[in-house]
Length: 252
Image (tube, rainbow, N blue to C red):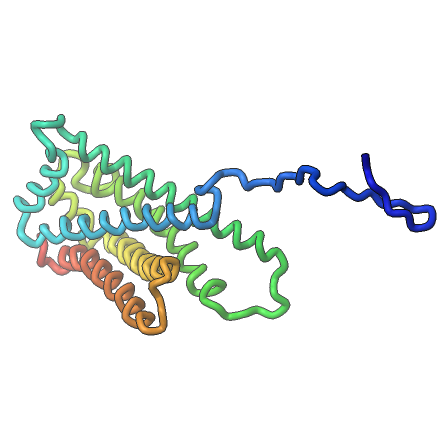
């Protein structure tokens, strides 16, 4: 039965006490569908990519020890795990993890950006100069696109030798030297641009991670911001020193 409250000729239905409540709708997607889940995915994949960059930089620096040292390092990547596992199996697994990390990192970034945009559909009447709406947005958006294009070129050039003068038959050291030859200055320029974008992207990403984890307090604000800048600068310099050394003839 439904109770009613009479107000003249109008009646308003009132649910009796003890009646079942209408269940509130739940968001689909579970934890990964939430903002915290997407931030967690971005943090984990970002950490994987940072570790890869550190290892990759260390490997590149072996070129200063000569062709034999660098080629031995390149061969080790293909034979690591032998004889327990066949040749190149571990390297392939690493490549799969890296590819998945890149895709998931981009997915979480785009998803979070879209969610933030939907949460504030009406633009401000006056433009506001803020980190989220200015410098950081452009760095993460255009920097990410530049890095993606560079990764594709980098693989075709130094990994597969498709666009490298040394070709597929050339040794890794030969492809490195030929790839950054003075006559191909435009390749080096593109490399420098991409690496600088990686540094800016990394600095902002590390600082955002510190803030998300709640580590950026009043006392730790400056030290953590300096840490993000220093880590990014070391990686940028570590990557740029190799092509510069090739162009000036230190590595030849």
